[in-house]
Image (spheres, rainbow, N blue to C red):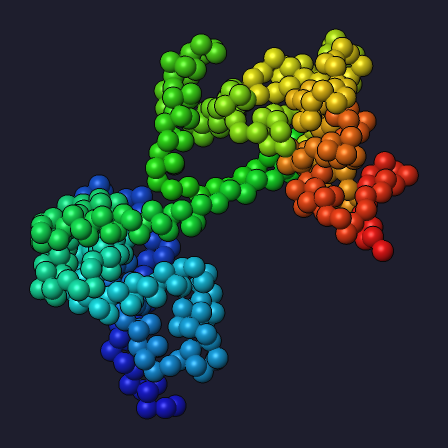
Length: 413
């Protein structure tokens, strides 16, 4: 055996002893523990977890210093740590950020090592200190750290985060406003760049989504949804039930917000308001069992189609029923709303073979240019996406109709 095995490092020995002690009580029942002992033990466990986190962070810093990741070719200490301990990379990187922060802020490291801080509190403090101006007087930064550590005796991580944003109002009032303005501007720019929305249909009657919004827009959305989900509003629909809006009720409010939004206030796409067209036969409208379908391709039950026939923002197109005059000849250059709706139903999107652009994003194109004597009649119009519409006006290409009814381009020779 090596000398190291005979004389383990004090930290190694302490960790082994702690594990041994905890293992010895792993099967000990706690049912007989009284309230005071239970409370005290939970507090001690929280302190112990903080001490373990500090030691782990210190060891990770040491691992980086002696380049242990290099032994396995790992790209970073966090990646090496994730692989060797079967920790997720997300958690490993979070632990490494804590280690880097504690390396720079000794007072916070000491408080965590003493068990006077929880890990979340330490992370909140380190985040606030990292956001301080780079050119801030080190003495003021040290005062800010100490003040946040004092606050940690009374406040949890969530409140420490709020206090951390305004800490300069206490330690350096003359720079606080400029710092907060710069911090908010940075966050708003990052939020604008991070704004995302993904939405997909699972093919089983449900649509799923995920989004990221800036704080202002998120607050506006919450206001709208909570107003629609409020007990007083819900009382008009039946029993109030629980008083606080649940995720289900907020989801129902989101549905109501979308379905009842005035379609006349929406911007036009393809010459029409962003209107969902529900296509159904006269039999479906009269209460029979045929399914209806949307212009976007999804199918609806007959009951849902009849209900939506009266909703704002949804246009019922009853096939084989009465309709507007769709042929305008030479009296009008641009297609009417009725014609655009008819093309939406007929074409279901861009009419170029192989193109999958949806109907709400297409343009209406004259097969024979209006300036060349073409008519604005339904049979003379084609629905094209913006890309193919531009190509249709490119003199280098000729538009031909296929036997399937679709169209294709050929380069002129």
